[in-house]
Every structure is written in structure tokens, then in C-alpha cells.
Image (cartoon, rainbow, N blue to C red; front, side, top):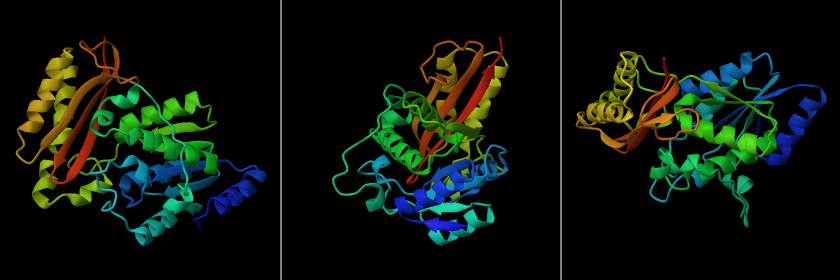
Length: 286
């Protein structure tokens, strides 16, 4: 595995690979890797459309708000390097902030509409930061395929919209949410949880599953499903609900009555200082 921290060096390495006809698979991360990241790396490694796997680690300051956890976001670069190496990564890109955002940087990418819902309401500016850094990384790496987890469902929608609108020649491939045995979605921020908060956080997936079961039994009223999710989460004393929503997929629009097709049940809540998100994509039968 080769490691690069300069854009020019990363580009030169990939230019040589492409000159040999190799196709590039790319997994962008913010590091502190977990089972979800490793599943994405494995997907890239096993993809018949990919010859060379590139992973980036960059804690992107643009997607953190002024009172969020940029400075305390968990980091362990040495461990991440070993996990990437053991997972079959060919090249690791770990640029410093000044390499990605040099003095005078003044250009941003903004996807409108879908970024104003769900997490976009709670974290204004977050998705502008996400779109900007992913656009830059796509320009640097120029991957054929890029891999993202559906746990960040709104992020997936935003990136797909940006790729389509800006004509990036990238296939966006989405991996199912990876969970612990008790259902908690793996997340780098789970490290913030104390033992009691860790147990309490399982209420997120439990609330989604119960709502999914209600849909399977024939419930079609979105307001009742939303209320059901909210009541399940707020019954947990250590949970502080941010939002619970039932929206169309993939355009994330609020709905009143579920129609045949896919809907997204999405939640966000605080447990201590950890803000966790989760979702469930449900197929609604006719």
C-alpha cells in the first residue's frame, strides 16, 4: 500500500495506473475506520469493475458547524493505515487541511433543495461542506466507482445529485448499513458513548424496525408512523430526539400517505454528546 499526502503525488500515481488501463475504485472517509468503512473497502476490492482501490482519510472542516466536534472528532491514523493495508487498499490519500483548502480558497459546491431537509435542517452548511470535499476528491482521484454507505442516506442522495448535475463520470455504489449485533449502526461517533448511552442508543434501530413492521401490517399514514417512531425514542430517558421523518425515496420529500414503492424512515438523536443518525429503507407493497 502506498501513502500520499500531496495532491500532485496522488494524481501522478493514478495517472500511471490509468495509463495501464486500470480502473479506480474510491472510498472517501474521515478516518477512525470501523466495520462499515471496511465493508466499503471490501466492496471496492471485490468489484469486477475495479483494478485499484484508493481510500482517502480527511476530516473535512467544512462540514462541521461552529459548535460541532471537528477538533475532538476521533482520529487514529496509525490504526487506520493498518486496517486499510489489511483490507487490500492499494493507495491511501491523507492530505492535510492546507493541501485541500489552501490560503485564498473561495469555491464551494452546493446542492439545493434536498440539503434543506433532515440533517440539513439541523446542520446548516453541512452538505455544502460534503459536496465541496467530495467534488474535490473526485477531481483528484478521478475514480470509475465510488463507494458510500446507506446509513448516511441523505449524503448518498446529495452525492448522486451532484454527480448527475456536474457530469462526473463516476458510478456511485451504495452499501447496506453495517450494524452491531444489537442493531446499533456502526459509527465513528459511537466512541463517544458511555456504557449506558451505548445501550440506550439501540432505541434508534428498534424504533425504525417497529415502524417498518407497522408498514408491513398495512399502516400507510406517515404522521402516525412518525409519531410512533418519536414516542419510541423519547421513551428512552437518555435519548434527546433531533428528528424523526418519513419521506419519499430518493427525493426525500415529506409525504402524508405511503404509496407503493420505497420510503425512507430517518431519525437523528443525541445520546450524551454523540449525535447519531439511522434510517430504514422500506418497500411499501400495493
